[in-house]
Length: 313
Image (cartoon, rainbow, N blue to C red; front, side):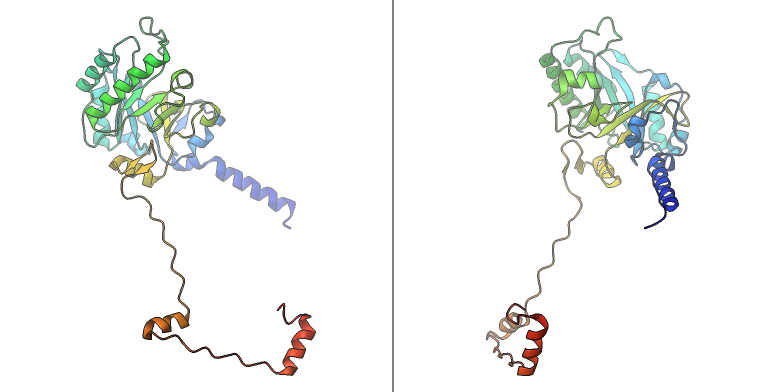
């Protein structure tokens, strides 16, 4: 067995490797207030950001250079608000080569049809854009629209707006939510849609009654070159192949269904035919069986003596 010193060295090395893959993947990104509870999200190989007017002027070339793989960009809110930086951010991300998605923030005091009309007016129908996002959470910061509504009424509004987003963009929307709203309204609902979940201090499985997730908002205090101050950072659940196939429309990440190009599983090779069977197939006649020669008496006696039972052997 290796000595104690060697075992301690290997354990420390393994711990270092497990603790720092995020730094290895994204050495230019950081967090002004990191939390150990979201370490699994930091280890995901495909990471991005979400932004709005509050990030100010963004240098999208530097954001791309830092390894940003996707960006959720705030577009509309309620039935009459457009983020003032949306068009600039939308064009800047495209020019820099950052895949981007537009999101609509729901106001529960506004009719769903008004909100559908509003985001259809302002969210582009770009063929190269990622699927849009419906941001559903209680708006406690609004005096006019901060009041909670009954669960069934909220679900009806969500259904109408999801349908409107999909009709407008031709792509299946993503649902963004937080812990409280998911518990109040969404548990057990829309299970074939992709979910983008917020948890900045604990693993998602500790906060949500949900078997799977697609995007994880794991910090609001991220630091990314090209953006001044804090920015939300997010992780994608899957592999490079799944991310590319989702972007191409070949993989539904919500239902986990492939629409072509799924990974191939090699079929087992058929067992080789015995020589006798092959001979019969070749000439149509069964082969002649030749009886085995009886071993010499001397050999039989030696085998019995060495094994104890010729019959068993």
